[in-house]
Every structure is written in C-alpha cells, then in structure tokens.
Image 1 (cartoon, rainbow, N blue to C red):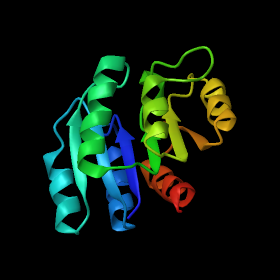
Image 2: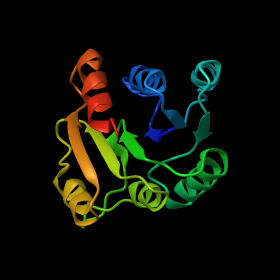
Image 3: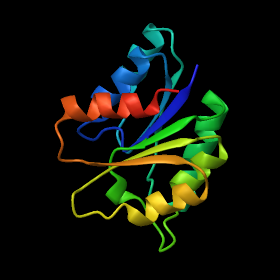
Image 4: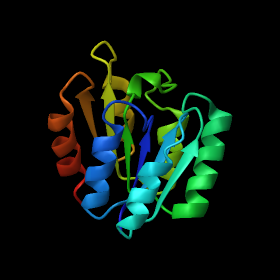
Length: 156
C-alpha cells in the first residue's frame, strides 16, 4: 500500500483529503498540533495503517521526532501533502526540514497547499532539482475541488 503524510492535517481540507486517500487505498500519517484519533480509527476500520503524530512542522527538532515516529509506525513514505505550506520553514533555496526529511523516507510526490500570498516557486524548484514531482495549490479553493485534484496527482 502506498503511504502519504499530511502535514497540518487538522486544517480545512485535511479531513476530506485524508479520507479520500484512505478510500483510495493509501496508508496515512497525520501530522498536526491537534489530536486526530477519529481519523486514525476510521483508517484502521478500513484496513489501512494510520498514525497521528503531534508536532510543529516549522521546528526542525519537532520534525525529527515526527519523522522518527512515522518511520517506526509506517516505514517509508510515498507522498506528502502540506495542507498549510505557508507554515513550513522554507529556506531561500526552497528546502524545508519537513519536506527534505520525508523525501529521505522515500517521498516522490509533494503537494503544497498554501495561502494565495505564499510563493511556492522556491519549493517547487527545490523539488524539481531533487527529481520530486510537485504541485502547488491555492488553499482558498473549495475542498470539493482540492480533494480530487490532490488524489489524482498522487495516483501512483
């Protein structure tokens, strides 16, 4: 089964996108500052592996703990969905500790969903330089539009 990590999973589109991926056969890791037990239980009820890990994607120390917990529970990662990309600690070269760590775990696709004022260009360039397929979406789009777009992009 493919595995996706959703960061800032408690955000507006997190539930809908996470549920759609689980319905499509994905195992999921949910990273958030919130507790998301019901989403993990739903995934387990459908026979999928899932974990919810609490932490801050902008803090490198927290990211290290998030990655360690995710790797221990789910192993490798195939895709990442950043539901609040504007909250990432993106450096001038477009890298951020969160995406870089998940790419090291095997992620080959990244979706950045960010506020309209967030410029995804550096992050997309970093992904291209590392041969990672990446897509940037406007967080103000309707959830019923974002969900199939993300699911279609992530289809392996």
